[in-house]
Amino acid sequence: MAIDQRHFRDVMGTFATGVTIITTVVSGAPHGITANSFSSVSLDPPLVLFCLGRSSTNFDAFMETDNFAVNILSASQDKLSTHFAMFEGDRFDGTAWNAWETGAPILDGVISAADCVLEARHDAGDHVIIVGRALRAETVLDAAPLLYHRGRYAALASE
Image 1 (cartoon, one colour):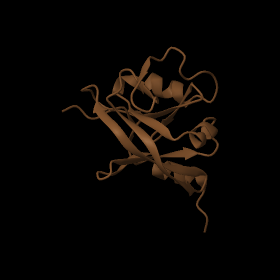
Image 2: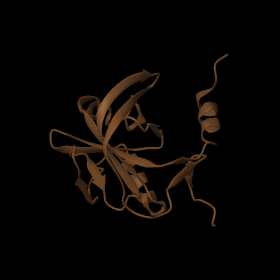
Image 3: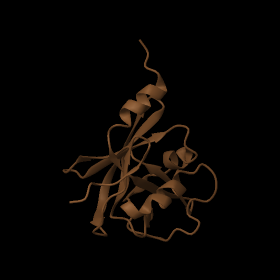
């Protein structure tokens, strides 16, 4: 029995996630996507993964590159997340960033970031799982994270 895609998405949306922007540079041009399908995989070696939809306008860029950066967003960066989730326009227009070892953009104002080289790609239905080895990982800002739950941004409960 097949599961309806919308139903499956709604059910999976009950799992709260953090929000990241995954970035890379191909032929001198920066590329980036908003992703909540991110996870730490291993401490030794230091591996992370994200899942990239085959329909992404940045799919080809991430298939051509051998590096990427994971930018973990703060609660105040919901507009930046939405900006990078757009399917049209220059996602880096007006966005300040710098680069670490690989040259992939590390966005200003993120909580933390990891600069990675490609370790592996795995086919996974309508997505590709991209695994990277972190060359550098830093906490940049002490702030609350941007969360995503049931199709919208959410916040941690007050302490």
